[in-house]
Length: 469
Ligand code: GLU
Image (tube, rainbow, N blue to C red):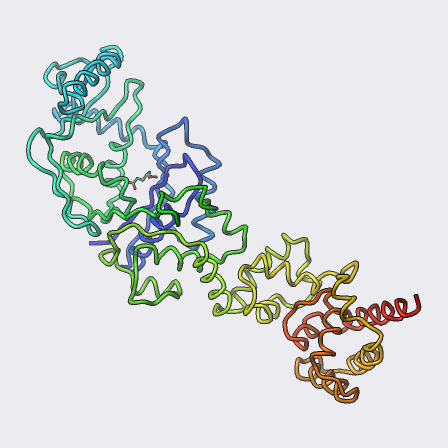
């Protein structure tokens, strides 16, 4: 059997972390077993689905690298197919028309609640053979009246539902639009889905879907219902716990691989390993190892993982991802060091790519003024001569390597009998405009010879002018 999993988001909202985790588990399972990953946009709810949300979903999964083998399929384009099945079921007696008015249904429902009985449609139109021209009629599926539906869930284990607790579901509304559970069933069958991996808020739909799949006489997929993701306060993860839209994480400078690493650990583990590369996840993931209990979202851990991936990731790869953040910060990556060198210099300290781009601004753009506090503390007359000497030595350097730069600065420090720290900090302030940067030789190398000499000149003038004032 070919493994075929699907991600079936409804574009009634943006792509949030919970959906991404569902997509990831489906994708990993397909990749692990050399299967196929299908994308299906469940946009039957025309009023609430938007093209903007569809774009956000596509953009999100593409950014995350969850490549799709088949799709996107859009349910809104498959109505003919759904109605064809409904028609066939009517002919075969697996479905029937019902013309009970909304008002009648509501009255009966209220009475059911009042009497404490089973709440749901009572099946009174089952044998009435209502014709197609009946005004405002809907089509209902004849759910089996007796027996049980046993869901062998790959995560939850066996879950049993009594058919007597289900009712005859509307599959086509009076306006000829098919309903949600019906479309899912036809799609899962037509798309030969072998594993339905989704949030456990859909577990209650499963017995209805299984009964309809049986009516289609197709083999049932394996179901795996994933436990919820909670916020740090134990409530269902929502906007009030911070960003839930995956695009906000992209915007903030998270690496997709860090997002995936974080999300894979929400409900799945491999010993106590925390750090996973994507190919490692693929090799190790199995849906049967997913935990049954809800997991909670921890933004600090996500940030920590992001830093770990920045630190341990392939520098050239991280640099490719840094470029858009440099551009976003208004910088021209061509007017400064190779971004890979920025990554190497900053990967121990930056937690996000956005932060890295902001920290490296001085490498790509001249600053208008030195930070006054740093200037006051570090650019004092005592360092004037050493800075002049550093400027001369660096100007003579043909080899702009970290070692040569460090040796030149050390020589000056030794000749003035000051320690490296005392000299390094004024140089840093002069060439970066601030008091924080990577080790001084790395910083000087990053900034580049021309800029370093210009900035040292400016700092020397600054000290001279201040001394004269
Ligand atoms: N469209 C559903 C949702 O976004 C998913 C349905 C399914 O996976 O079966 O929650």
